Length: 456
Ligand code: PMP
Image 1 (cartoon, helix red, strand yellow):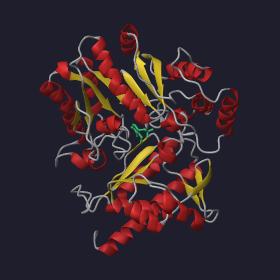
Image 2 (cartoon, helix red, strand yellow; image 1 turned 90 degrees about the vertical axis):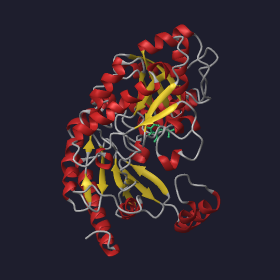
Image 3 (tube, rainbow, N blue to C red; image 1 turned 90 degrees about the horizontal axis):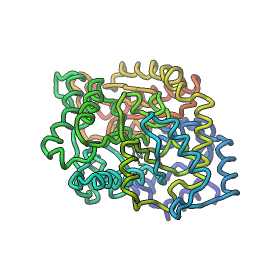
Image 4 (spheres, protein in one colour; image 1 turned 135 degrees about the horizontal axis):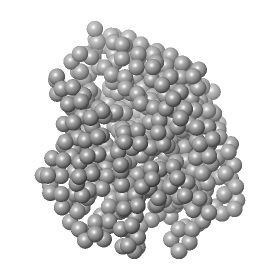
């Protein structure tokens, strides 16, 4: 098969697509991406599309990095596979573990490798429970997460998640509790300032600990910014209050850095942007810029000491710390450091995009246009002042996302919120192009909604 039509027919006949209405997708046909360079995707009809989502929040260094390809090929030739189970290891895992210890905040010096973000969060659930077993507090089992959270798709990681339609599909594992999320635009009371709301939602953690009893709570898990939940950037009062509660209570604080880690927020890790002090860091995606599947869980020294004292931790995956994936990660980190991509997000590309993105708040369809580092959102609303939602939540978001694709820009829709997270290497000219396409998308969507009579 070579033509788009032939490929689409084969796809429709044989491939079950996750996260898609498969019936309508098969009628419409998927878009087939055949190659990519920098921030640009090319589809099977030769269209060039600006990738505003870095693949799926991962291709931070951009596409077409020969240096990573070469590192993977070299490692495949030398040692394509080995495990870390038989009192064995390999050079890429050793080197990457040391590199991560250097890049993360000082309390982090030890890592478990996995193959993905979901596997990392499964690892975390076992690990925190093991930690409290060793400390002879086996009743400390409950992990507190937040509504609208996304922490992966396996049954255990999915149970940590709090997105109703997705995580309701399978029975959650026990001993997971969900509290409020700091989504001011969507959930604050009328008249409540972002600062008041941030404080109130943070204090939900303390209330949950008090209600269940501190002797039953093992950990709190959160992303610095909820990514898949719609790029929810908490009000300034939120993280300091959460950090205080975690410090004062005997619980572990887990920062899920799968999206925020590796530069996205303008620091190496999102926890640094918000000055929190986690005990565990969860990583995947940006660790290899998506070139190979890899995940990691880093534990702070105070946790590592207990685990080391406890002896074995019977857990691991065939592809944990795959040699070629570790080689990709090392090459990826080399690029990030040499090109100072984190500094670029903080001081150059980030502020350049933010200045233009914030102006979208003036558009009649946009309720808020938050952005931090190189990740942002556009909340679509029929009425800014009342923070009103459209009827049939999600329909307008999907409409806008489809317009965006037609306009040659990948944005994602979560409910009626468009989200953007371009590769960290995006140039100023490409940012101008991104902004022009996003503006056209808003205008197209607005015009269509006027036809529907959904806006005035
Ligand atoms: N945690 C977060 C915050 C994520 O965004 C994701 C993936 N979107 C995951 C975990 C799961 O990662 P993976 O898809 O690699 O299993």
